[in-house]
Length: 441
Image (cartoon, rainbow, N blue to C red; front, side, top):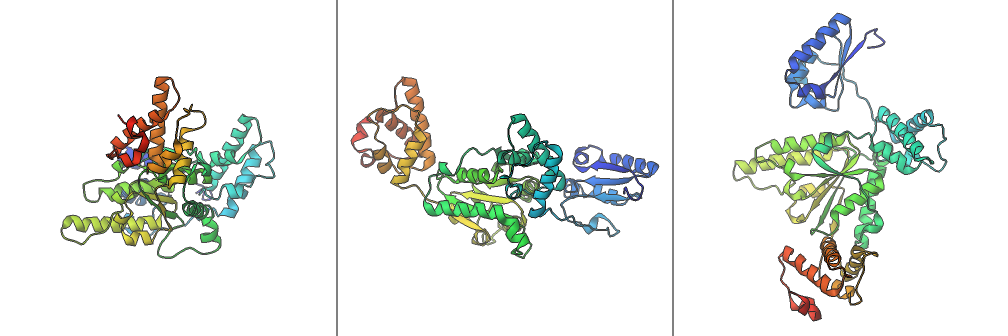
């Protein structure tokens, strides 16, 4: 438009979608463009493409040059005149570091530390040139305020700062604080988690530069299933992966997704995936079997719509470009066709006695006072509990000790275990509590 000698009038379609009289607003803008000889640039297209397509039909019928920008593919019903379709390719990994470095050097008086490799640090982030420039500026300013040299954490924080806020309304954002050392898992599970992290970090190189991208409309995303009982470390593992990649973790609230009305669940999921496409983060669907359930034989109208919903979810997951992790307590409830299309299926077993002992020591921590009679090896050997349960018991015992003003003793711990058993609906068996059965109240 600038080369054609026209001024530009911008239209925020997201704000237009919230306007009670959007048609009047569009007509006023078109009138202004005609009077001034300007052109229109309207974005983001995704904000109105599904809910209010009539606005797009109105915009494409205007007598002024109009540019529509968005991720949504063009729909022929929006205009009777075929548009000129232009595809803006994403910034490839090799170019990201160069763009970021150029922007950083223009903003920072300090040179880039030789050991810092922005290409590797930015590999998990899908950023536009404008976002890369803003990320470099943010990193430079953060390092300057800290009064030190630029660090990898500054680079990642600057990149995360470019995340849109739309997903925060649909999912709970978690800033990861745990590391690989915090995980207590079997070696094979740990190895598979490392492999999943490698897929997320190098997906652009493998699928883009090396041409290993699968067909069938699949995106560049990575998807995995975490299957195991409650408290076995599924959510913490997702947080560790997000921390390793320098990304935030977004946990989907299923209450905002599942809807009893036909078609509403798909709309809710579509909103989540659309917002997630503009966010550099790890998307975690907890209790995934509630959404991605096993397809059933068609016996009534409800079954028919449930199967349509399941098929839609399969297709949407395949086209997603981000990192999606599905967590479930009931792997058997998931559709076999769905699990075949996942990159990794990782099982989280209940910890064995050696792992439980390590969990007991970590959960109680080095700063909590311990009584001389505390028998953690006995607890690890006799009480078959998951890590989440052990942590809950440790917290209860710590509160009891703080209230009594004494150290955590075996009596305190047995009382906390009894409370956890009551929550779980488990019986207090003499075979488990052994010589400490007399401490049970």
